[in-house]
Image (cartoon, rainbow, N blue to C red; front, side, top):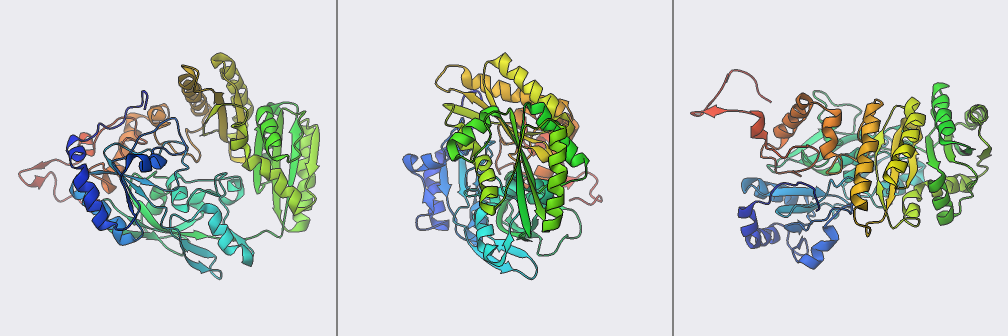
Length: 498
């Protein structure tokens, strides 16, 4: 893992590997433990494949009791644990550690309850995002967050990363659609946060867990809201001579009080790659392509289409095609959903970034990325959730050319610095993981980071869950002066402690 600082392997744990593997086989019998190097290769990285590392052992539990016993065993013996869902994370959040148990939740793959009257579904964390919609679509329902990897990514991983998707502008991210979870703490304790009701009392611990990237606990059950499919959904395919004009159109649509079900944008390299891949009928003579989906009652959708079309032409659009059937609407989205694999056909390698900016800054940031592209001598294809300013630049490079990976990473870091500079954030849905870990000080000062670390310490005081991720300095809770005990007494024992 060139140049990436990770926690130093614990020698005592490495020496006890055979003993740990044997004990894991007792806790998770059958085929639930993988320890052969060749077999563990399938788990050596997640979607950020530039970094790879074999774990100490791979464990695939099937019951909550097994998860609890594995975590308690590791906690009692000071063994690190890295939770993993489907491994589609693009920030290295599920990157294994040499001395850590890789706890893979893919066998938790059952739908536990479907409650149409209350519009909820209870699923195990290994159920795929698309699998939730598939389970309820026969009754006209669906699950709104829809990341591009929805056919493969798991709902547990969605909770860990607070995933979004093309419909998050109107219907929200995972955090806006999760009602409750069951989770196991590092000490083996099983707890529930939230439930089937809208909000729970007290501290918003469910909000803390959503997007916590496996640092606080292991999710074993998820309750999400499902929505009734809109009466009508139609999409517009709008082309522009420049990306800046497309970006301004996005701002004007939102400024007019119109909230589309989805609003996505692609630049010329992404348009051509997607069209060659899926033949969706995209115009090839434009620099930017905007896909705007409007949903709701038919009369409302027809009215909003006219408004969006007028806004587009005021911003200089050269083409505007409106879907006339459900098949055509889906074809508009097919290219966008396949944009990432499509770009893989025009470059030996690409580095997928994730930053979020205020919508009004879209033209400025797109111009800045073009300047950086020229500076680094690397191409970039842009695909992003334009409505909420969540950018996904795809930096094109060739890993076989010495130094190009390093250039791509530096290029990506500069893009993220630009996002923060204009008032944005480092990530919208991919998470921090290891990819953005060392950029956290660009956005947070030391006081901010220490406070975040204190939350981590409250859940995992020994720093055994997914260490080396998110926080830019490799340290332990004790370094914050978490609690000093002198002769069996803590300072100020009368103060209530969380």
